[in-house]
Every structure is written in structure tokens, then in C-alpha cells.
Amino acid sequence: MAWEAIVTLLTLFTVLAALVITRVSADLVLMAALAFLLITGILGPVEALVGFGNPGVITIATLYVVAAGLKETGAVQWIARLLLGHPKTEKGAQLRMLAPTGILSGFMNNTAVVAMFIPAIQDWAQRLGIPSSRLLLPLSYAAILGGTCTLIGTSTNLVVDGMLQTRLGINLGLFELAWVGVPLLLVGGVYLVLVASRVLPDRGGMKEELEQVREYGVEVEVDATGPLAGKTVAQAGLRALNYGYLTEIDRDGRLITAVEPDRMLQAGDKLYFVGAPECASELRRIQGLKPAQASIQKLDLANHQRCLVEVVLGQEFPALGKTIRESRFRTRFNAAILSVSREGNRVPGKLGDITFKMGDTLLLEASHEFVEQYRFRRDFLLVSGLNDSTPPDFRKAPRALVILLLMVLVSATGLFQIIEAAFLAAGAMIVSGCITASRARRSVDLPVLVVIAASFSLGTAMTETGGAEWVATSLLGLFGPLTPWLALALVYILTAAFTEAITNNAAAVLMFPIALAVSEQLGVNFLPFAVAVMFAASASFITPLGYQTNLMVYGPGRYQFMDYVRLGFPLSLLVGATAISLIPFVWAF
Image (cartoon, rainbow, N blue to C red; front, side, top):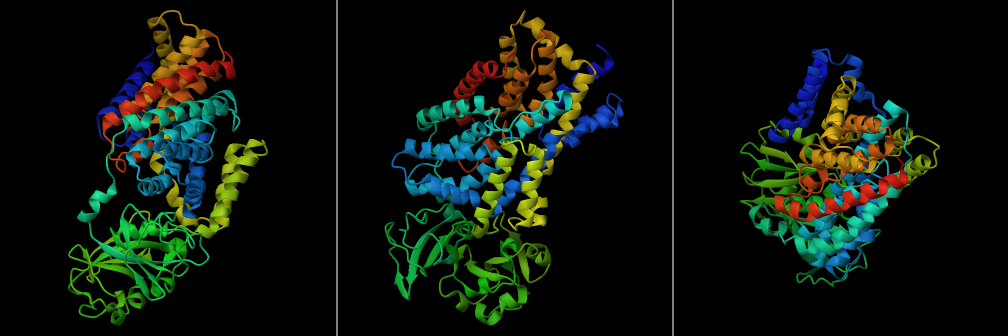
């Protein structure tokens, strides 16, 4: 081997070790590797930075905007409430959840699907009396499997497709992967329905933590034009929220304090909830509810500019000793008070009659700029914004869904390439008002894109220096003469092992040149090996670190590491065996 190949392989092993052992972020590790390869002269500037212009990477960045438009309009929550329904059994609930999750993940980034489904599934699980820990991990696995069904379902597919375009001039169709992806989704779905309830324990939920947080009272009104009027409290999903509970209903001045699950809601009902600060954010995401306070409606802020903020009153707050009504708080700060908490407990009584005291914590609806504007003012001891608290604009949900459908149609029919369709859809989301330009910018996950793009430099170095060819020769020599099918299985297993230890996209980029070298040495078609890398890099079920969606459900489900091993290891074997069996029949050697 030339010295360049040796240095490249040492760099690769160093990167793998750093990703597995250290806590240094993946984008820093891979950018350091890129810089090293550039400085040592192993790669020139064009080769080192090739990933930043790869079509797959640019498509991923564009699809972040499309997913954000669906999130901002509440389109996915609307679909979830429509499709989840009211199953009678735990297995029925899992089946009802797996279908929409798998389908949606095929047409938008599966990370975005899981992010939007988590609160909906938690609410739904509590309403049905099912432990959310038996639904959230299957949710992640279903999203991973659903993402393998189309080219745009997961970033890994787009990354490998981008390398196929760059290296070999091959373009995969939008639904070409469905020949293997759909059977994987069906096989995996059946396994999860049959096994998940037996393997996953009841870890409890957020309810047990409510007593340990600041308590607020939040008042909302049933919108006459919304879908909740005429439904019972249970059907509306208000019986068991994650962060609060319904205490009373004000109906035309008559107070209903014992709120039964089968109590029918009427237009104009004022509902009073008690709970954590996130309760207000949770209620905002339910279509058919609107804030009861007139002051919130009078705020001079567009829907996308609003968020929830907590502030603690300091001794220089000018309205101490005055009531909320006397303080003219909304006029002075352009923010509306939703609730007041004192010494960790909600302050009872009519909101306008509450007198301010130093140390009171206020829950506000304000602009995104409020935190920066008042963080260092002496009026408040502390100013803190609540994450992801902008209320969705459900009126624009049909618009966002139409844009998504058109993107899929023009891509599937071959009218536009996927990257072109994604650009058009992202532009349509902004022009139609589904998302603002500033929110679109913030929706792009730059660290993830840097990880993917920087990984390309290692892949290129492996090919250019002959490192990939050496690894392929060593593997074939180590395991003896291999048939193409056994070589395919070896590539799949190695990729799956890599993706459990490092990021899925990095595993795909690093294994791509090795798989290419293996196919060349065997003298067979490379496409089955590229597709095997696609599926294996996505099939991360054994650890919470291998795939982002697994990590996202870790906290909300209160999972332990062994929960992933018990449920994920058999699933990984099942999916691997199915994929290896089917791939050669669809893409011949």
C-alpha cells in the first residue's frame, strides 16, 4: 500500500474511535478529518469538498424546509388524529400507529415524522390507558422502516443516491426501493405488533413528574368553527394530556367542576387546565381550541411570530403591588399573560384580579424576540422561552399537504428530478405562507448536513488512495472465496454494525467505496451492493445512538439501553435476512 492509503485508513479508524468513545460532536470530528486529508495533500480542495455539492446533500437540506412547513401548519398532527382513532386493544393501537407512521415516513423525512408524532402518541396512549413506552420505540422503528420505502424517506437513501449519480451516473426512481422497503415494513410491522407488548415494560409517563414542576392554570375556549364541538372530553383528547389536566368547564357562566370523560363539549365552552408550563404549548397544538383571554387575540403578532415565555418578576418590576388589569402589561411589553405561578403553585382567582408580587413566575404569549429584548432588563430576574411553542396554523394544513402531494407526483412521474421537485416544494411552502423565510432557514439542521458532506471526503480518499480496494481484498481473502450473495451479506452486516456505532449517514458514506471495490473484484453489478448499503445503514434498531429517531424517543419513553437490545436485535436479524434475500431478485448481480 502507498503511504496515502495507510494514512487514510488510520484516519478512518481514528474517526470511528472518536465517534464511538468520545463525546466530541460528529460534525467536528469529520470536519477535522476533512481538514487533515486536505492539509496532508491526500485530497485536493475539489475532492475534499465534493460532499458539499452532492445532489443528495442539497436535497436533504431542501426537504428540511418542506418538513418544517408541514410541522408549522400542524398537517401531520391533523393526519395523526384522523388516522389513529380509538382502538380497543394494545395490539390494535400499535397496528393503527404503525400504518400512518410508515406511510408518512416514506414521503417526508422520518426524523420530522417522529418529532411531530411523539406528543400526539403520548396523548393518545394516555387517553387509551396504554403505557406510552410500548408505543414510542415501535414508532421510531416504524419510521425507520417506512423511510426505506422511497428515495426521499430517509437522508441515507438520498446520500447513497447522490454518490451513485456522482460516481456512476445512476439515478434511482422515487419508488424503486419500494420492492424491498414495503416487504421490510410489513415484516417489521407484524413483528412489532406481536412482540413489542411482551418485551417493552411499562415505564410510566410524564404524569408522575407534574408535581415537581411549576404549576399554572391555563384557560382555553372551544372554537365554534373547529372540530371539537359536539365531541366528548375523551374523544377530543383532553382527558389525559401529558403536561396538565382539565379541572373545570365554564359554560355560559355556569361552572362544571366534575368533568367526566363522556361530558359533551359545546361551542364557546371555556376549559380550565392546571399543569406544567408545557401544558399551554400542548393545548395550542390541538385543533379546535383557542385562547380564552381577549388580550391574546389583541396582541399585534402574526401566528408564526408567537411563542411561550416564562419570566420571574424582579424587585424593579414597575407594577409590583398592582393587579394585572391595572398594570397594562400587554400594552407595555407587547405580551399577554396566560397564567401566574407563585412559589411553584398556580395563583387561584380571576386572572385580571391577581396582584403582582416579587418572585412571581408569569407564563406569557409573546414574540420570539421577547427573550433577547428583556433578558438583561431589571424588570425580570429570569426570562426563558419554551422550546417549540409556536402554535400551528391549522388553516394552512391542507395547503401544505397539497404541496407535499404535488412534490411526490412530479417526482414519481419523472417530470422533475427529486432535487428539482424538492426545491419547488420548499419554495411553494414559503410563497404560500406555510412557513416564513426565517423559520425555513432555522429548520435546516446544519450539523447533520456537515456530518454527511464531510463524510464524503473520507469516502473519496478511500477510493482515490486504494484503501477501499485493500479493505475489499482483505475481506474476500479473510472469508475465502465468496459468492456474490455471500459478499452482499457481508457488506450488509458490516454496514449495519457501523451504523449502530456511528451515524447512519457516515456509515453509508464510508461503506460505499468498500462495497464498490468488492463488486469490482467479483466482477458483478454494483447496484445490489449500493442498495444493501442503503438498507443496512438505515436498519439501526439495537442501540439508541445509531439512528436519530431512536434517541428522540429515549427520554419520553423512559427507556433503558437493554430495551433497544431486546426488541431491536431480533428485528435487525429479521430485516437483514429479508433484505439480503430480496435485493438480488430486484437488482440482479
